[in-house]
Image 1: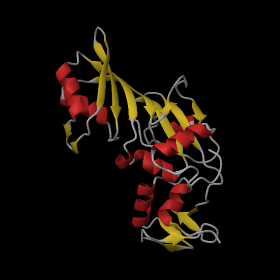
Image 2: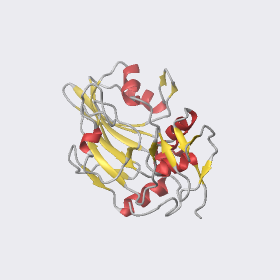
Image 3: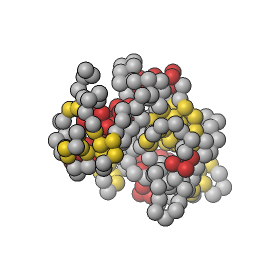
Image 4: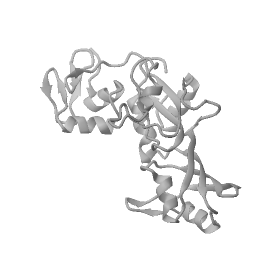
Length: 252
């Protein structure tokens, strides 16, 4: 008999969603175990013998772990579908074997590196602020960015959802109509960089994520994806304090 797992961990490991989202599914009664709706977050299941379903669809544990990098183009939505008919990342991943879900988000207009995985433990740690995984962005900012603005970003900015953590900011280039900043964050709020610069009256012309933890975008062309090498997955896991091989059920 396999060791019982917490229900949210089983769902995340199966690629349903992050652990936090799986908790929400459980609270809302969307998850059943052996036909019985479950709302208790501490429930444990035996992956080999219990039948788990979400919205009536049976959940099977993944046989392989899979983690990949996508170069998200601008004007592509990080979602499975869109009621307005906009392009989504699912359109770019239709040849990926098995199910993966995004690690965090990039907003509709932003572009660059986006990670996907079916490893729920890894995804949870990569996105949780407690683990402070660095994300590096190149940002084209309309107008001239003053030293005072750069210092303000470095100290942290008060937003409507609270103060941001200090950012690492470097001026890379001054051009005719915009400046280019390199910004590194250790948190990932919705549209955070756009909102931070808006506090100082600046609009963003282009925003590209070029690194997520130890994984770099490199020369991956827009709209294409690649599977991460085993060594890269190991680096990611080490970056969030996961022991080598912990939680792994197959190749990455």
